[in-house]
Amino acid sequence: MKILVCISNVPDTTTKVKFVDSLRKLDTQGIQWVINPWDELSLTRALELKDDPLNQVQSVTVAHVGLVGAEPTIRKALAIGADDAIRINAEPTDAYFVAAQLARVIQENSYNLILCGIESSDYNGSMVGGMVAEFCEYPSISSVSAVKIENGQFIFTREIDGGKEVVTIPAPVVAIIQKGIAKEPRIAAMRGIMMARSKPLKVVEPSVAEPLTEIVAFELPKPRAACKFVDPENPAQLINLLQNEAKII
Amino acid sequence: MSVLIFVENWDGKFKKLSFELVSYGSKLAEMLGKEVIVLSIGKVDNSELEKLGKFGANRIISAFNDSINCFDSRLFTSIIAGFAKQEGAEVVILSNNNTGKAIAPRLSVNLKAGLGAGVGKLPTGISPFVVYKKVFSGNAFANLTIKSAIKVLTLAQNSFVLIETENSATILEVNVPIDQTMMQNRVIEVNKQSGKILLTDADIVVSGGRGMKSGDNWTPLLEIAELLGAATACSRPVSDEGWRPHEEHTGQTGKIIAPNLYFAIGISGATQHLAGVSSSKYIVAINTDKDAPIFSAAQYGIVGDAGKVLPKIVEALRQQKGK
Image 1 (cartoon, rainbow over the protein chains, first blue to last red):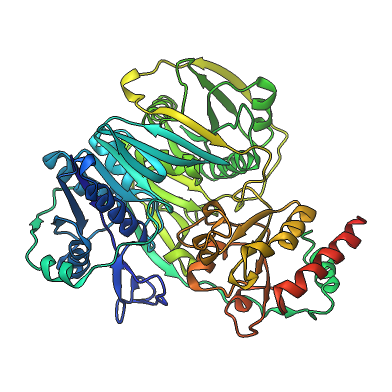
Image 2: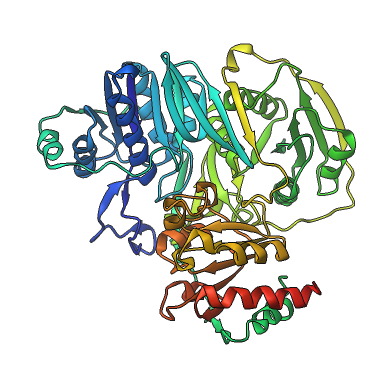
């Protein structure tokens, strides 16, 4: 059994984003790059599955579409415990392009389970996982909050409105992962960091795919009006404001 | 040529978000000069389907097949793509909820259609086709051009007003043939709470953070929610501590919500939390620290301890409601 985890390289989630080039490009100066939080949780769960010999997981591979600058993030995934990595050497222009590249790698290497985070914390698209599945003509399951293997079969828990659904899907399958999949992201230990340096990181050139979307300009949020403070001894005033000023209750 | 809107149903019923989708799609169709077709999959009564017409649908296609026994994103994609091709859809619109997020990317590849996810407004331009969406978890917005001939959009919940029209739509029932190989999901178990207001659907949300001090202190917060007909939520440390279930976690890695009114009680307002709630129309913050970042996001604030302030709010609400 082989697992692939697709990872995206994103600005640390506490970054104050700024733009340059007349608001057309992200100002990358001073940005700390990290593994997208949902991808990191997916990787953690994949490694947990591998830890249990009953699951018979032979390898956990990470794949990333990006230029050489993303390699520290890929090495971090290897340090956390992935066995090997594949970097598709291209600027990740849009989700469609990225998914097309990942799909090719998946079809060439045939994994049983492909994990993708439900969104990336930069462009918040919730796109790549589903797109990869459609390119590969694989089944997919989204909003997955738990995955286990029983008798060689994948059992997923997915969130539905007002509850949960437990589903089995035959391999190969793409699971699109949300919160709950693992308690905490696994942290790289010193030994892992040492070992990561010699783990295989294969670089492959992209195939031809045309991006379908393009960001033409960014905008920063408008500052909100100042907060109106209410006397803590007299919250009735708050209710009054919500009712008569905001007219919201 | 048309605008095709996919609406899901919940046990044969539609919700506010279904009508938001149709309202949005109708306005967009007006900009493009196209027909509005709404596609529903699964058994829905005509009386329920007719409601979609009121929000501007010209035609409603009610597709069903008795062998569809669960939601399978691949199968639903193939059905929607089939109708999109048949009807010459130029834009396909879905909700940005769990179901929409599962289908839209697949549909994008199937139709080779660029996807604009989580849009909240009508496109700012038609030619080129430019949509406006949140990026960096709400810390910025982007104008995104979709260059393909067909476009797929997912609409953020509670972001578009309902627009009623004088319209009435024709309903066409279609027993849709399906490819069994596309249906590989097997549901083993469903665990669903009924009767509870869904966090993502709620107009008002009452949310507690670390400032609540313990999971045992939730009673007045729940009472406020009850009095306001609100859903309850929490910040990440609260769900990590197990004071409240994970499903209630709002924030960057939890649920992204956009209610009309959000109460942030004992929540400092870290970037990651604001990422999940910054689209709320009004935010009320209650926090002991007057410098907490939540007050910069809030319209109304109380500097005080939740344990002392909440019972007084309960009291004031009871008086207001005459209870």
